[in-house]
Figure 1 (cartoon, rainbow, N blue to C red):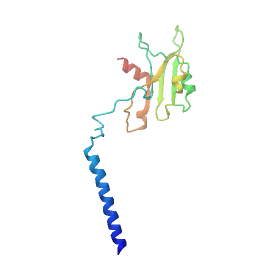
Figure 2 (cartoon, helix red, strand yellow):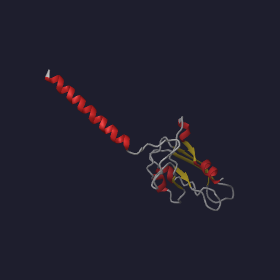
Figure 3 (tube, one colour):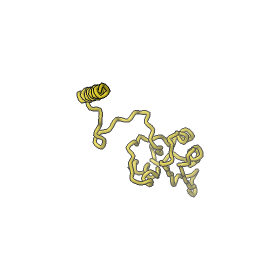
Figure 4 (spheres, rainbow, N blue to C red):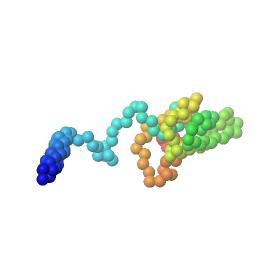
Length: 147
């Protein structure tokens, strides 16, 4: 019979300890954000997916299609293509595709680019229902951003 009262006492004690914790946190200010309507400010050191950098004068990408970013990527998520125009000097970028589902955000591509043509973006709120939503054509994104 004494075991019954000991269990009753310890159960009641733990109930009041839990209620005390709940009551203490009920009086503190709310720390939850209403997500779609509110968001936290991102730090300056935040690294999102990579993006192309455009030339200030022409708006064309600074990329010279050397392929060092593609070679430096350990997860093979970058594919780029370029063609040499007739009478022109050097290659012109025609396609720059990033498969963000494979990207590990290691930064090897940004470090290996000697021309400063790519950087980390500040896009952080990426959401999509399908895998295809995360395969980015960075050349199109740069053109849309320039408009």
